[in-house]
Length: 338
Image (tube, rainbow, N blue to C red; front, side):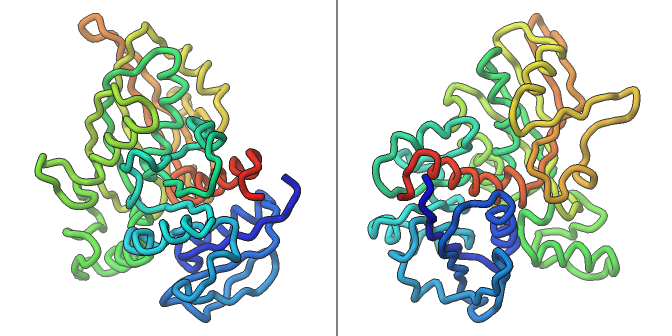
């Protein structure tokens, strides 16, 4: 497609919104008009492609001016506006969890199931996956296709940027003054780890932990058994994951290295002799790739098990902004935004 498109972004002043703007510029999306939108941020200025633009009121925006609208403002905003925009002929990409688990709403990681978008023949609502799930499935997908993952256990170590600006400020302030009480989280986050992301459900798992299970099944394979423990850690940016999974077919470290080294969007950093492995401090600073290290395989009771460590930028990278922009690129390639 050579025609320029019109894109609106609700949540343009937010942490993720700012990263989406950076990626739209960096990846040179062919945009004619860009509409930064918000609510409390109305009147503020942002810079897009070297132009000063003023954030408009999302509540009064004529959505038919846009071919596509990105919602990066939480579930309440998505619930109120997403279907209305679609009904008026506009594609919508929603970064909240509001619609991810509805059967008829595509939940898309372009490298894995982007082909679903080619079958769409009218403007629709597209859900962006959970930040922890995106990086996890980027790594699991090529392995699952060849060796068939059937049991997955994952522990996530999630940065405070995933909660938002207030959480980042709370961590910074508590590091300086540990007497500052917790407001964003149920307990102090500085010098601590909190084994709770989101609310607890009746099954004693948190909602975040169930998101990992639900979305893995929806995107990758409904037959994979998933158990997750999601932990908030005193890290500004970058989610990390320790994963442990079983494959139906025999697998070794060389197989994994071979697969992942050929997989777009994945970088291997795995050299124990030189103490080389990914960390959020070193590898989650406006980075697009998912980083993998500490790969180990073992046979337990004649079963094939794999352990590894995964790190990615949860805001700029596959966890949020990048995946949304890649969905736009896929729609453009498939000539959906004419």
